[in-house]
Image (cartoon, rainbow over all chains, first blue to last red; front, side):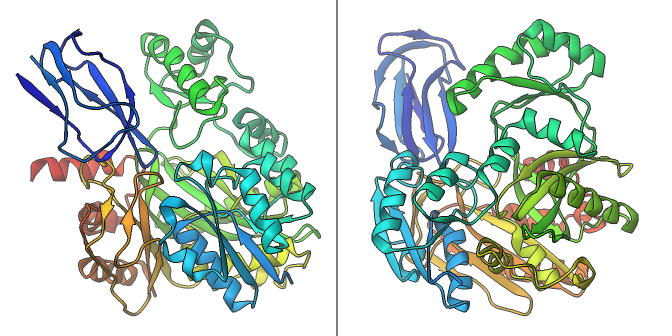
Length: 70
Length: 451
């Protein structure tokens, strides 16, 4: 099980993966937006999206868990 | 002169404009979003109006709300600052229709210079050197490939409506071009509502050097020398200085004359900036024109002693310039650094609550501040929280003063790029004046990945 964490504080602009999706390392899960910059947050491991902890429009801080990959 | 103006902007530039207005006894009206309720500029203005929610399209880009505040306040003119609506021809037209003076050039010139393809065409006609490239937009990837092979790789792929590096990519061969074309066109369509692309030959080892111009619409057009703005990250400037440590006097004069030629051909009025790419042999090519005040305008003010905001207000008020080209002298050297709320290595934004903010005073030190001690830096806007400008009798003195000020600059609670700025200005290559646009990738990033 791996936790995918936010690399910066910002709001969740788009959620591009869904719970239950099977994904590969490097594939984007969500796109964060902060200060006119969009940062995609990729999965760091292959697996299945067990849980997505955020919704579009949510605010996250750096280090917050965005998703859990199993 | 105007009795009262509205500032359709935020942060340090709103504060900067208010300062000149106070000096000139002009009352100021600030507009602000919910996120900026406690921002210093809101308090500094004589009056302030809430214009909407934090997101820019609900506040600072909401023309109806801004014009409503202007009407309520009785302001006669609107200063757009930079960014936001400052280069929006529709906003200028709406101001005019509402009986307000837009402090900037005509909407026709803004529209022309805002369209990169039209701007290149206009500059070519005015006899200004442009980078070899397509004068017309390219319709598909096959046409793009044909042009790319005619000019020779590397090629810069650009969105006609683009800005801030969005929709822009360097490609080295047909395969890379094929990969990049559709994606960038789509991004430009999403961001700017216009997916039109064009191609330019990439200038190798370029510097970004721009000329400040001022025209009064009564036939007087002058330039205020250059600013060298080559040190950038994510296609945004970080360090700017005047004069350029690179240009020869001959090229400096040629660039100034060329900028005046361009501005006259456009029948431009008010302050503006012609940006050039300059290669290692001092060949210069038109890049774009910014039809507004620039972020880095203070370095020009420091070496010429001219208040550019004051001149903008005077020109907008219909006055003639009170000086000629021959009256403009430059003296000393000024360097500006932009303080960004961001990680100093990855350049990712770092919004948050400031727990300490204290800036150093000293000879030749000037501050332009968007925040105060207890400010919260929100994620809604550009990460720039302040600008620090150091002036010296020569470049070495300016660097020394800047170094001292950065060492005593105290920001806590968020990450800033101050460690990066310290490394950049302490670098041998910076001291030598090797300020090419590749500086950050070439000299700074290897330094921090070593650490």
